[in-house]
Image (tube, rainbow, N blue to C red; front, side, top):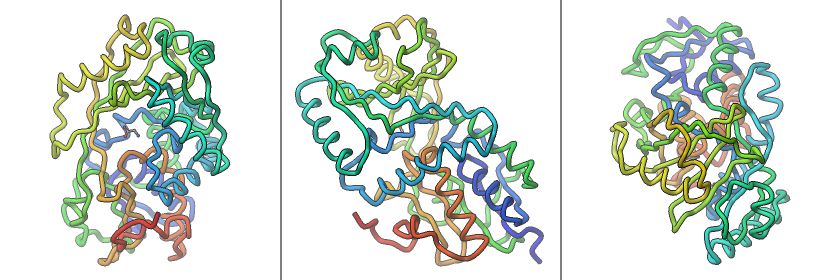
Length: 351
Ligand code: GLY
């Protein structure tokens, strides 16, 4: 006998947002998670960066990213609680001439998609963000790439879901088939592979939280590839910055690794020298749910379980579109075309 219309496994940002949206549609929802703080959201910096985190081969994923980004302003407004959403854009800094050429290509590609960005030279770069190291050759201002604070977002979603009537159960689910529910949603991030027998693997990421002496003047995310190693610096409104992120294939190991901390601090300080004087507040380690094609699994699987997982590097960005589309599927049985390319039965996402 079903005791709830919907059982959702995983109370990270994805599972909690799906729960909220499903409850808003009149479904009874039970959300299972023994420890939501394990989720990747806790480590995530919260870049909403469809352009600067882009890989050219992933155009179906880019469309999904853009659809979700477009929903962010109304999504956070409806939540009505602090989320740290900031539409300040991102400054992608070139390290050398080869980087600058790559940014020109990125600019042309973004422009062809109707996204606003502009190339700037070294002097303009430092005028926008005076704390940047002197001598950088230029960069790209991506007006469409924003940020949110995932910890505030998760707290807001939890409050909204509770207010909408979602029942939270702090229990580990080991057998999806044993859940007494009309429909089951698997949103267990990096643990989805083990729980659902899916091709989802943990990809370890480390981020640092620093208390800077003087905040980034522009409030923009700064992103750079320092000698081939990518670093991003995400300024919060209170002056703190989040520096990320390592990417490590280390199974379920979440031990902070000294080498990763060193590399992040080295690269961040190379781009913004003053960060060397900042207070190191926290080292955080999380597990991204990686898939073979870097794209999420969204929709009903062969066993009837609805999947909302595998968001890899884009879980925070993809939260609004995932929540809306999965709630539609739960309430009506219909697949929103926006998630159709990400059906769990695919062998590859079409470009
Ligand atoms: N989206 C940033 C990261 O996964 O590191």
